[in-house]
Length: 144
Image 1 (cartoon, rainbow, N blue to C red):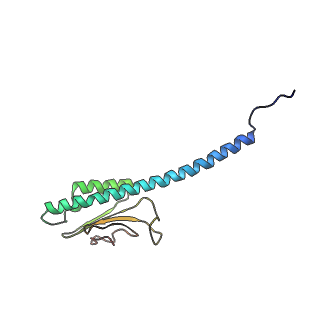
Image 2: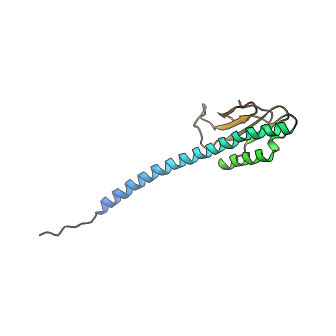
Image 3: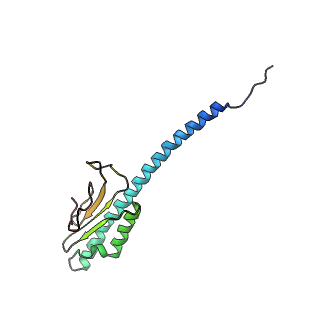
């Protein structure tokens, strides 16, 4: 009788390793996308929560939004949104009668019509939406 070899050849092992490598790269790419979407959700949540706090500031300051961006709770929410994006600084524009805040999203080019950077914007009129540009200047008090 002949003796049978019961092992894998080098080619078979290399093929299996290559398949595992390809599958792991697909999984890692999916994880990066999920991580970016999670960061975007944190940015949206933090900025949307500032709206209720801004109304408290408005009530406590005799009907003025001028102190909105210096309020400690809004500052913390803005800092948390900035940290979720990796430290990109957001904009907060207050005035007597209105305010707006905008922070760059983590994932890029998902919603932009012009394939640019996406920003999440909230303001005193109740808007919260994705925009192609952040607040253009310090006197913009409404999402575009």
